[in-house]
Image 1 (cartoon, rainbow, N blue to C red):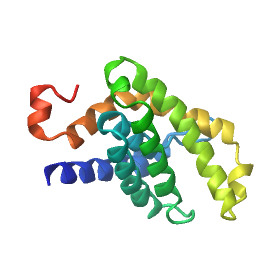
Image 2 (cartoon, one colour; image 1 turned 90 degrees about the horizontal axis):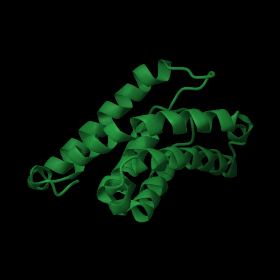
Image 3 (cartoon, one colour; image 1 turned 90 degrees about the vertical axis):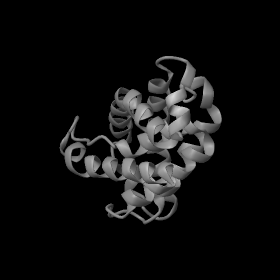
Image 4 (spheres, rainbow, N blue to C red; image 1 turned 180 degrees about the horizontal axis):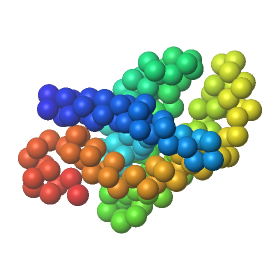
Amino acid sequence: MRVALRTIFVIAIALLLQNTIILELRIDGVSPDIMYLLPIAAGIVGGPVDGAVVGFLGGLAADLLLPTPFGLTALVGTLVGFAVGAASGSVARQVRGLPSAVALVTSVIAVMLYAMLGALIGQSQFLHANLAVIAVVVGVVNAVLAGPAVWVLRWALMPPARVRDGAAR
């Protein structure tokens, strides 16, 4: 129960930060998107299931505030979280700096996947945006924030005894 409450708390705080502070930051006219960082960090910390669950819940929460097709962010978050957890898992936890590289690459992929899936469901304007700039801004910001995100998701997803014993490292 504690893990679920902490995870929901982290998602709520990230959503609040995304829609207040982060939304006001502009790099070449583009706002970063930290909501993709949540499933990436959860996949690194907890594996594919935790990554997918956090991606779905975080995406669903973000979809409530976006004027885009409902569920699209949740779908992309679920896919990204599962893929990161399945592909990087324990390796990314053990190699210093790898979470940042994983966050950079996966964030770029998430932005492109979002645009392509949006176009498939009739939102062709997603492909007309400057995707390269959006992908780079989201990727670089998420790479910079990957370390703290992994630390926060480790706190949220690991049972208290495992965190104290150092098993989450």
